[in-house]
Image (tube, rainbow, N blue to C red):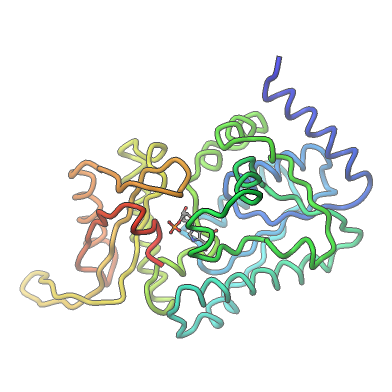
Length: 318
Ligand code: XMP
């Protein structure tokens, strides 16, 4: 019978046969797909695999630590974490246009990844977490999000670096990838992680990205995440996050007038991200998020909830 265990076993055999004694690299993001692809490849070839995680300074609280803990400490995988916060933030200085942000981040990502992989010898393959729906989409048509917003993952890399691709998940759907991840011993926190865009928090800070704004957004984002989880909504919601708006509004604290930032909460239900509905989160949960964000995150005095669906809105605000 067809089980995930036998799928894993035969995938491991295939990878070993394909790779031989060459070395393999992987751009690990900590998302479900790249994580499962990396864990599977690691099971097949151990230290012949090197994973590169680029910290672009646009990650959420704790994200990098979680990847370090899971892949380096627990799985003992050869993981190189590159701290590239400075060059990314410098390149994004005063940039407000969403597509320019994406281009800058995509280009710098490739540059960082390439520079690091040049240090490794005998690399012939790149592992990618391509799923079956990605395969279908790229041969038939591009959905709205693919054409309206340029998604920079590792698209141009293999050709540029003359690498062959290993795509061990290309016959699987998302739910099967989760079962496989479990089989490989990955923690639920990774297996059930909501999608997070490559350009990270840069496209959730409307206007220019600064350290201060990143700090505010991280504070708000952490609270949204905690409250969604503790209400038991994390898995049924496709994505829930905070967005920092480029305006200030008037508020009152004690007998003082305040003039501070606005945070928008965005939460949607969706099957594939192509269409989405705004999530009907219970009012008490929204109220708790709002209270906590305004009380705990310095610089915010107003919280609003986004009640638009996709289309015509998109999931991200940029
Ligand atoms: P939109 O905002 O287009 O988002 O409705 C659909 C899905 O794609 C994610 N997204 C991105 N992912 N790079 C990515 O890797 C991007 O530039 C990007 N823009 C949006 C978004 O989070 C949602 O899951």
